[in-house]
Length: 163
Image: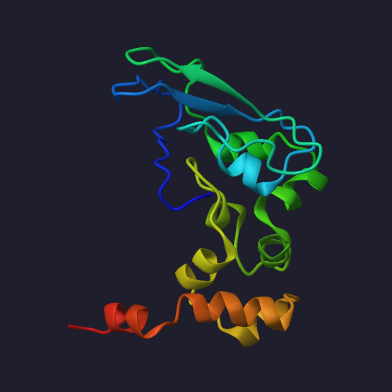
C-alpha cells in the first residue's frame, strides 16, 4: 500500500458515512484464497483499492458515494479469523506470528485485534522479544533480526528511555 493512502477503519459493527469530498471504496474480501494483505484491509475504506493483491485474488470493492453509507459495517477481525479454516489462519497472521502463537510465546489476541492484524514487528515490540527468543521459537534468524531491528532504532530507544 502506498504510504499516502488514507484508510478509514472503525469500531466493529459501526457503519461509515462518506463525509469526504470524493467517492471512497470499501474492500470486500471473499475469505477464499485470501492472504494477509487482503484480510488486513477487509471492509476498510479508502480510495480505489489496487486489486488484485495477488494471483487468484477474489477481493472486490464497493463504491461509497459522497454522503452515502458504506455497504457493510466494520468487522471484528478476531471473529473473522476465528471462523477461518486453520490453514487460512497462517496466511492471515503470517508464518512467523503463527509460529509464535503455536509455541505459546504470544496469543491470538496479541496478534489479532478487533480492528486489525498486527505484524511481526509490532508483536516483537509489544512483547520485547529478542532475536534469540524468536529464533528459539522457530522463526528464521534473518526474519527475527529484521523485525527486531525495525523496532530498536535509535529513535525508538530514545522514546523508550525514562524521562
